[in-house]
Image (cartoon, rainbow, N blue to C red):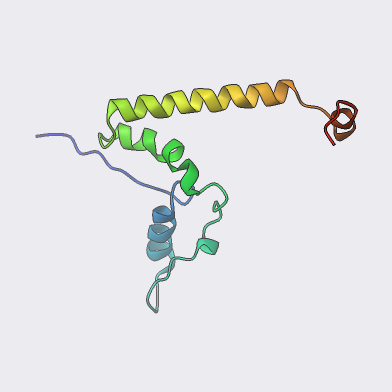
Amino acid sequence: RGSTTFFTLDRADAYMGVMVDDLVTRGVSEPYRMFTSRAEFRLSLRADNADVRLTPRGEMIGLVSSERAEQTRRKLQHLSKGRELLEANARSPNEWNRLGFD
């Protein structure tokens, strides 16, 4: 028999994790409504970073192709290089003003 792989999403991973956690730990006395305000991590649970958050998890359980996973890895490398570039060029507001950035 094949092995069983469990897949869980917690509150920091996705709104689905927020919903499941709410239903399991808090219960409901009326129809459940998923409000983004329920999620402590709502600033990081954005559609524009879903690939970075969820592709590695999907690859781990076989839902994401190797091509898609590689594309996400390249994106992460580019983001990392961009962060390094920004950190290497960190300046105070006064320094940026002296350089002509008003």
